[in-house]
Amino acid sequence: MNARKTTINPGHIAVHAVLIVVSVIMVIPFIWMVLTAFKSLGESTAIPVQVFPSRLRWENFSELFAQFSFGTMYMNTIIATVLRVTAQLTFAAMAGYAFARLRFPGRDVIFAILLSVMMIPPALYLIPKFLLMTQLGWVNTLQGYVVPGFTSAFGTFLMRQFFKTLPEELSEAAKLDGCGPVRTFVWIMLPLAKPGLIAFGSFATLWSWNELLWPLIILNSPDKMTLSVGLANLEGEYVSEYPTMMAGALLAVMPMIAMFFFFQRQFIEGIALTGSKG
Amino acid sequence: MTRPAARRKERYEWNVVFWAYVLIAPTIIGEGLFALWPLVQSIYLSFTSWGVFGQVEWTGGANYARLLDDPEVYSALRNTIVISVASVAGTVSIATLLAVLLNVGVRGTSLYRVLLFLPVVTMPAASAMVWKWIFNGDLGLLNGALSVIGIDGPSWLTDRATALWSIVIVTIWNEIGIGMIILLAGLQGVPRSLLEAARLDGAGPIASFFFVTLPLLTPTLFFVVVTSTIGAFQMFDAIFLMIGPEGYALDSAQNLIFLFYKEGFIIGDKGYAAAIVLVLFLIIAIVTAVQFWLQKRWVHYG
Image (tube, rainbow over all chains, first blue to last red):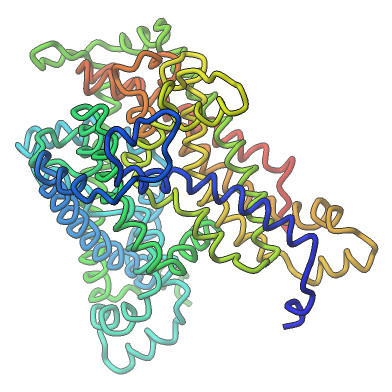
């Protein structure tokens, strides 16, 4: 309240100035993406640069679906993301709870091994993973793409840290009431873990949606591809069709931006949590 | 009196132990099958050679000998180091500046935070398209802006002198948001009472930043430096998307991960690729260990 009274603070003006300049630089690629998605080809490559489209050309978007199997790729990405995130959340919550709250032989050793998995560059697994998929006949299939991403060492770690912060008395009270470990987990711990699940769920969704290297390796026909790989290919096919490409890029980034706006607080707290507990 | 060890053993409730194993089973199977076992296999593969028809042959240390002799490996190593050092330095310094400014708490802080974080949630395949165009020599926005002040910019992504730096710029743009959020959380952990005490002792805002805030922020800075270095050593997307396997300037920008991808999945020499990625893993492990060893020189734990 008091701060509002001091109307002009020269320090604050300087802070605004820097933040505005940096924010604009950071956002320019998005603005350019949106503007170009509605331009004609001529407008998009005009010299000197034409900033605004003369009118909103929605046909650039319909072009994507008509000439390029964009709808299929969109569906592929949605299906793969839903499957992977659901599995990761379920399995990470289960294991995280067990590591945080249950006593069993080998717990600490197994957990230490899981932690060491987090330190290893994922590229190290790619070749054997790909060879395994070849043996199973899963190359260029949905299951080949999603099944190796059903579990997450990072998610297990995050959920364990989260379950550790919940009061011990709760599970003891549940035990006195005759709840077994599974009922305590499902009915008492899981509902309390909602903020942790949302934080990890949004990370997992973001990674799955945006992932490039694994789908690039495992998926090779347009009807199986995800948006990431599809856009990389779109560039090859429509080299200078800038408006069509930008329309595709815009549609591909929209869901994650929407999710970020929706779960902003959990997202940011989740990052801060991994940062401080790291 | 029973011995403590024996007592601890008795305390396992077998009902709980059974369910605990059931609960961890999917994660253990998944990570075992798709992480731990592949790790073992990668080590084995790095000692083999792959023929044109997929026949595998044990060749001992031949891949490693070849690697030590391969000029492409050395240039990729150099690019890896340049990309990592430059992008981590750029990311951490800009992210620190932004976190400090956001921490002032001016009006509109949450809007700035959202805008600055936006690149983090953006699909690299989509943003790379825009960046590629921004960097385009003839039609690009960057050269358009430079021509206003009379500079004739290069064709950024196909010029061997600038390709690598274009990749660094995009990497920094991509990573700033994460570092900024973690550092902001670190700044908010600096006790107000200490800053108040410094102020009473006559320290101005700049002095109290360098002598109070910054030392207390070093554990967070250390975390951000270590994790973003590990990430930067494995940077792949921007190189693939903006320069590509057939790019003119590829050899001046490709890093070890990209070379690994090229050898393993384009050329198909999976043994050699496995050796490259294992060497990269070793380098990351050494760099991380050195960072931990150096931390006592500059990180203050309260």
